[in-house]
Image 1 (tube, rainbow, N blue to C red):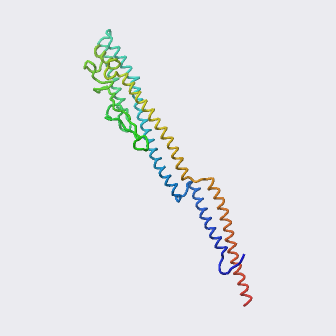
Image 2 (cartoon, helix red, strand yellow; image 1 turned 135 degrees about the horizontal axis):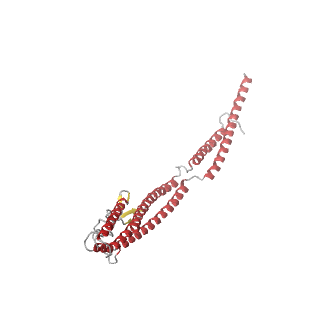
Length: 295
């Protein structure tokens, strides 16, 4: 190797390559520490940002669907309790009171229980709420629209417009029977009218048993629909997350290999630079010796 007193080409080259490898080592270390590619990879991050926006929309829609499922489950539970526990007992009482051998005193006792059950039904309906909305008292004038997906057109409706209270003028447990009297069992006629409203074939609208059965079927169908949306959104979240991570996640195996390589190159470069600087130092020593002899 030629030794020059005007420049240190070997040292300059060693310093150049050492700088490059050191910069690459810093990037590799950053990627390994964060688990992500660098932001300088603009094309991948642009696509990843689009996926992230879509992903967040799907996650929000998934939350909407879960809330809808919760609301439907609450309504279904209340309807089941009313239908199985209360309406069945109302029918039993009406059948007993409609019998010709039942006395008026007995009907008065039966009607007390009858009215108490009606009050219990209203209390349960008043407590059947979700997010501040009462679901079974007809206070929701229109069907509720749920945003079930990230697209504006991805919507599904739930009908909570029916009134199941016993003090309503319409509905399966309305207060006015066929004779115009209140729904009670204080007389044989009233008991027969109440029975017709509760379980009669010719009741208009359909009798309470049919109405509650229809409502439960409708809610069950809505639950199945929304659970389907829930599954679709959950799968979409997995797919979009995987696609996004593929674009921005660092390849840990490859980066680890580059880390080892760069560390070796940095060590080698540092040794080469030290050697080049040592050669320059040798020149200085030689000149010093020569100058001393001449003196």
